Image (tube, rainbow, N blue to C red):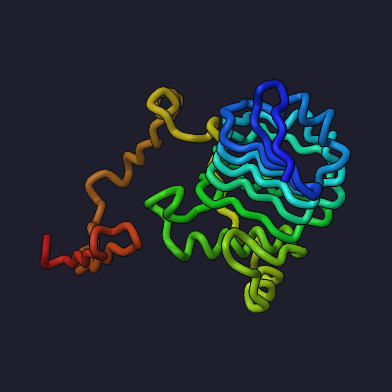
Length: 236
């Protein structure tokens, strides 16, 4: 094993494998790009503070890229890496799954292993206690539909049943967040209230309205329903 120091940074390089972990850098050091870019097939940049992948294009022979525990967000950009088979992005700051998958699909045509655990884009309890197994399974179907060449997603092999389900229903499994400009805010609600016109009054119908009466059974359900309470008319 060859131990080296580049610009006072510790790294380990052996058999086309380069590890540069735990150095608190926010980008790929230029020295690494120049000295190892054309040689490396496996690159591990875990446990840093990387926010940009500028310079990754120098590693054009990469087959495996490990970027766990960094600060990569939705503005992440990738170079075209035709040989990349493994991409691990666990525990970063990625929230937009659609955007990420489109980038992956465009730039990594040979990818067959992808891991996104502990990102908001991956809806399971590692990233959001409000999510459950059904949320995570829908996410898997959607990703497998978009990237049908995947053999592993996160910590699990893609099963034949998942592939079949993804092929038929995966396109409809995505969960979209409404754009900010359509989310109701107090200001938006006030503006709508001020522009609404009252319904016209039918003076001929005044005093002739007849009400309808009957029992109503209201059932309050859902996975966030505080124990799936049941409320019926007699409880009111």
